Structures are given as structure tokens and as C-alpha cells.
Image 1 (cartoon, rainbow, N blue to C red):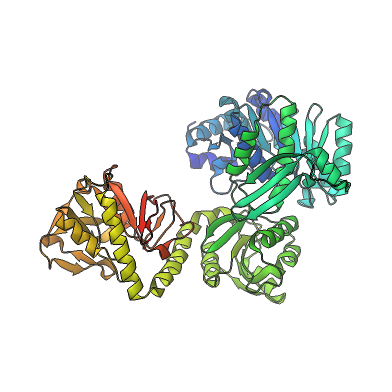
Image 2: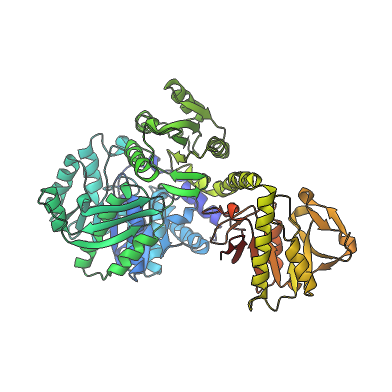
Length: 634
């Protein structure tokens, strides 16, 4: 039966895991019916309470940089269901997801005890990884370890145990020892084991399991990592040898031997401990015969991306998304707030939190940890039947003495937090991965609104004399640009008439016309469409959209976009990557799509309109050349 993507996802998600009995029998039967694809693959299997996703992302990227064909099975997804099954960084195609789901459905529906959604996804992933001839699959446990559907695999190359804390106690046990035993269920005879430095009771439990299974145990000592730099752009650290780490722990002194200096793209103090786990795993894989050059390790750490883990969605305004959802995550976030933002409990202004939690989470402890850093809370209800309603969360915070606002939607929460951050305070969205996907989807649009406010305030702060001087300089640099070899053949230019606060190109437009260049100007139409019009008379002008002066189409020559050799593009804000933020109506985005591929595009702005990173959406067009009063920037 042929399925659509929506039908495939609906079928998978209809089978709630919490309604199924614990055990591996369903997954084993399903995979047996499908030919046991999992038995032909090799794995790094990763379990733990916190840091699994980041650890997996680093490992996958390093292995990919080393030339291996990687499978990646993260859990959960943030925006797109297909994130859960990736090969070399690419999500499973929709066609493959539909076809394999139909194949799995035929077998699953024939079983007396129907598999859960996670068991179905695991089976689909195994088939896709085998079809794609993956050399190594980085396999993240969904929940627990021993009875997780991923644990049907034969002994992995390495079983990795990350940080373990009290979580899902109704399923995993109510002590660290019990939870560690459940997580340690992925350890199998024939595997090496890498263990994040955990509390003593966890360390002892995992040692005991490794001894019983005759598995070599490798501790990822955090003392091997020496931080050199930390910022929102990432971290630079030195990895010391195991011998040096042990000497440091015993106060033997000395710097010891360095195994490498690395830049990690992921900010957040806790990521360094995850990096120690990753690098220890790399060392173990090398001993097992995998060729992973130092260059691949460095490139993997520098290029790794992992959403919703102290992820900087924008710098101006500063908005950070962190999907942490338990007290351990809150402690890690608090440490990152101090190291990356320099905010302490005594800092004036502090943090604006956008917060949403599940009702069963220990939000009282989470707030005890993060409360000292808070200025204001904007409360939302995550998209989950288990969510704590925003009004109840706001009431709890109010009773605890905090300023808190209940919001009816995530969008309202983002807007409120951004308004509250106008004085330059950071915003951190925190509390549940169930709201992370929606935040990432809608944030660019809302961020653009905030960035427009920031830049308009800057431009309005310029005096008329400053604008005039900057406009003269811009016109001069444009003259130099168009006199060069790259633009010398330009015969038709699409320019603009400036709004009061924009760079005025009147002098440059006149100079082009004196040289015989045809200069067209925008005419805004309904539906975000724009014409290119060359006025036939000096007085053929009228007030158009936003009162911008535009040619009267009836007294102008209308050009086809294909006739235009160069376009001068105004903006509200820009960055040095060529990203542009306009007024939001999309006129230029639609017009530029119709221009020739070889048409020269030049963005024009005052230097005060520059942002470190402009929020972008899929329809936005990058402009390859930027001119300000400081000259050509790109």
C-alpha cells in the first residue's frame, strides 16, 4: 500500500509507547519478520540521562569527517520527524520513509502484540541504514537502555554511558543505582565501554556490570579538558593525555602532554564534559581499528551543530534556546549562563526566561536553580498532553516572588520576551523540547521584527548631517564599483528612491544617467509584486507604498526583470554574510527571483544597519555585494 508522508507519520505515532509492556520481544519479532537488518550493521550505542544527543552529534560528525558513511538515530526530533533517521547528515527522504513504513506496517499489523511508535521507528531506521550501506551507526537510546528498542542490536563497537541523573523514575527506578543498572543494560560482552564521570554510585554500578560482562571500561576524565576560551560562538580547549589527567588528579603537578587543541562549535560549559566522552570514544574506536585522523576530529568538533542545546538563535537581540528539562539540565544551564554570558545572581537586569515545563517534571527544583538569574518569566504551555498549563506555572512563580506572565501561545511568549528584552537583556527559552521545534520554526520571523526595531532606532538616532555625509560616501564607493571591470558592461540598473532614513542614492543615479545607463525604479503593486519603471519625464513621480516616491507607471517605460543588469537593494538590516532584512512585505525577494542569474546584486546601507547575524527564512535571498559609507564590505 502506497502511503503519503503524513499517513506514514500518523501511523507510526498512533501507537503510544507508554501503553505497551516493557521488553524487547516485540522489536525482536518485528525485525526478524523484516530479515534482521540490524545484524548487518556496526554501532556506537549511547545511553544516559543528559548529553546523549550532543555526544552522538559530535561522534557522528567526527566519523563523517573521517570519511565513514554514518547512520545517525537521534531521539527525539525537534522540527521534522525525519530528523530521527539520518545518513551522513541527511534526513531519510520522504519517499523512502513512506515506502519503508508501508513495508514495516504490513509485518507490524500482523503481530499479536503491536509494536510501539519507537519500535516502529527503530525498525525503519535499521532498514534505511542497511540500504544506505552505513559503515557505523551512532545509535541513541530512546528511554532507559536495557529494554529500549535499540538494545536488540548485537554487541556494539562501543557502548557509551553519558551523565546519569534521576529521571523517569516511574520506569527506570527511584535511585541512581537502579537507573544506572537500566542504562548499563546496553553493555554486552564484546564491547568496549566509555563512561562519563558520574556520581560514585553510578561509577561503581557500571564498573560492576563491565566486570560481569568482561568489557573494558574507559572513564572519560573531565580533568583531561583544559578550557582556553569560552563564548557564545563556541569553546577552545586542550585535551591532555590520560597520564597528565591522572597526575593532575593526584596533584603531581605539571602541564603534561597535550593530545590536541580543539575548537568546539557548541557553547555551554557542560559540552566540554561531553567532549571528553566523545574524544575518549574516538580513542577506543581507533584501538578497534577505525582510522580517525586528528584532522577529522578537529573538523568534526568545529563543524558540529546540535539544535536546542544552548543554541544561539540570534545575537541582536540575544535569544538562546535550551531544551533542558530536569534539574541536572538546569544546573548545566546555570553554569553556562555564568561562563558564556557573565551573568551572576548579583548582575543587574539578569535574564528573561521563556519557560514551559511538563507537569511531572521537578520544576520547583529547576526554578530554585535558575531563579537567582531571572528578571522576568514568560510562561507557555508546551505542545504535550503532559504539559503544565502556563497560567498554573505563572501562578506558582508569582507566589515564589517572581514577575511572571502567562502567555496563550508560544508566539505570544516570544513576542513578550523580546519586548521585555529591549534594554539588551538576554532571553533564554528553557524547560521542554516539546516547545523547541515551534520556537525554531517561528522565531526567525519574530526576530526580524525585533531586529527592525533595533535598526530603525539606530537610523533614527543619526542626524540629517550624518545621513547626508554617509550617503555621499556611499555614492562615491558605488561610482568606484561600477567603474571597475566587474560592472563596466552594465547598461540597465534597478535603483531606488530613498525613504527619509535610508541612504540617498540620488547623486549616483544621476551620474549613471549622465553616462547613458538606463535607471529603473520600483513600483509597488498589490500582493507584494514590484515593477521596474523608467520615468519618461522628470515629474513622472508619485507617492507609493510607505509614501516612497515611485514612477507613475502610465508615464514610464516598464522593463522586464530579465533586462536588468544590476540591482541596488536597500534594506533595514544586513550582516556580512550577505543576509538582508527588509520591511517584511517581500517585494525584493519576489522581484529578485525573476532577475537573470548573472544580474549583479548590490546591497546598500549605512554601517549602523549592520547586525552580527540577520534572522533568515527559507525565502530570503543572499546578496553577494554590500556597500556602506565604509566601502565595499563583501
